[in-house]
Amino acid sequence: MEKSLIELSHVTKSFPVAAGIFQALKDVNIEIGQNEMIAITGKSGSGKSTLLNILTGIDKPTSGSVIINGVRVDKLSESELASWRGKNIGVVFQFFQLLPTLTIAENVMLPMDFCNTYPKKERRERALALLDLVEIKEQADKFPSALSGGQQQRAAIARALANDPPIIVADEPTGNLDSQTALSIIKLFATLAASGKTVIVVTHEKEFSTWFHNSIAISDGVIVTEKEVLV
Image (cartoon, rainbow, N blue to C red; front, top):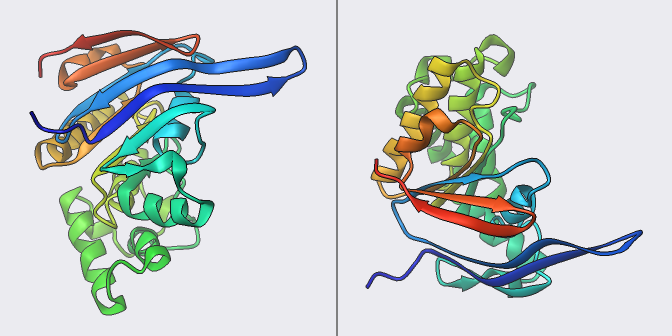
């Protein structure tokens, strides 16, 4: 049996608050394999953001273990985490988060500059290849303000792919897009999953449920369903 790419075992995350201790995650167990496209759903305050922060190494669990691609992530130091995250996780945000003073190609090259994953002379060529993959290569030398919302999100996906990470995490990536553009982004994620990436998407868009291999619902810090969904 193939080993899971992501394993969360008995993960709990607690925060001190005025009233005492707040448990954002309670004994969470999740296994996600390679090539899977996973939806994470739940109401505001359910624990989705905390779960994403644990998955991306931004935060550490209070207890439990987080093993991603064979690495015990919760045991890494801050400097080790930064290096690991840059090479293993690509993040796509709802509001794109492209730097307005850089061209689209320069935005895509930025993660390569930070992690030094590719020689300088190869970075623009790789950025153009990724922009071609997401079908906006012709926008490479424009600034983000010149692009539509859908084009900016495609640029953000290209940037997330810059260092060829095995995992793409997207936080409400279609929440700011019209339905047709949103569907094109979901299809792009499905293509990435089919090509070998593991794609984790936080979403409220129920109409896209058939595109996901699994749907994980979280409520009050507890996984309440892990429903198989046919693609």
